[in-house]
Image 1: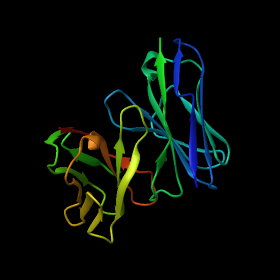
Image 2 (image 1 turned 180 degrees about the vertical axis):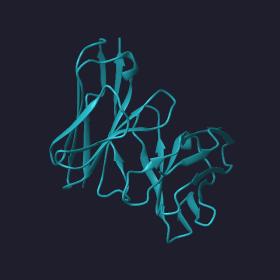
Image 3 (image 1 turned 135 degrees about the vertical axis):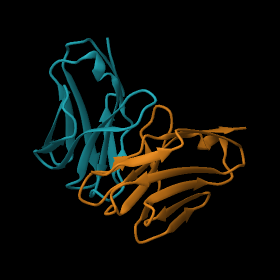
Length: 112
Length: 111
């Protein structure tokens, strides 16, 4: 069966510090991978998605970047965090665009 | 691009009553419509989905209906229980672009 791992579960970072969140998927190959951000009590904002190694599509201009160095690894990064980067970050995978997306448990990021 | 509207944003029902959440979509080419349940502090979990060649799908107390002509689909939860309390999201996809999600409905089931 397929599993998705996302870490860390919680993270507290100072403003201006770098960020690296990692997501890995097991039990499948060549999945579509997604990064979402969710503000408190709000909906899901798609940040980045990838349909293959090295292929990254950005949905909104922001202080973040994403990379896919391996087939089942998706990384969300920032060089200098802003207060507005606080939120709940979710990674998801799907076999295709119109197949179910499966979400990780998320990372709660607080910027101080 | 696709736009998905979800109503209501909050819904309170008595335990045992039914709950209905409605979504409309804009792109007539959309053909896949999943529903997700998100509990506090967790990632969304798929609870049911439907494709455009089907009008209704049921899974125990949960059902989804799709009206392609009107471009809307609905989630029906019968005999609600306190553990049904969560945020529910609808979504739509045309098959060559990522899912577009509604803004969510916070369902509270009052015991």
